[in-house]
Image 1 (cartoon, one colour):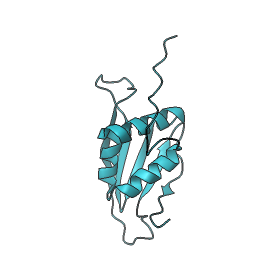
Image 2: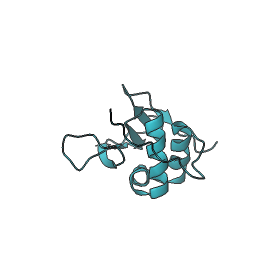
Image 3: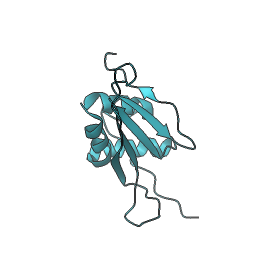
Length: 126
């Protein structure tokens, strides 16, 4: 059986984290959901760590939400209908601004493995 290569281990400051810790670190660093999603897909260091943690923890995609804007980040392929291994893309999934901030956390993420997991709000004041 042919197996894909092992993902490259992340370097500092993203080494030794879990996917949850990594996402909190990245989502705190970027001011908007779109810029965070773009960094996960296109920044070489962040993408390397994101790929490593998604592969080792068996997640395939995630949603990043901020004030009603929801971005979908997933593996992608240049060959239609096939799964990719190291390529990621993001797109605006939903634009639904809520009336107040209690209904809409500042930044939250939701992961997918075999099912969609619960939304996790990123604390910015911790």
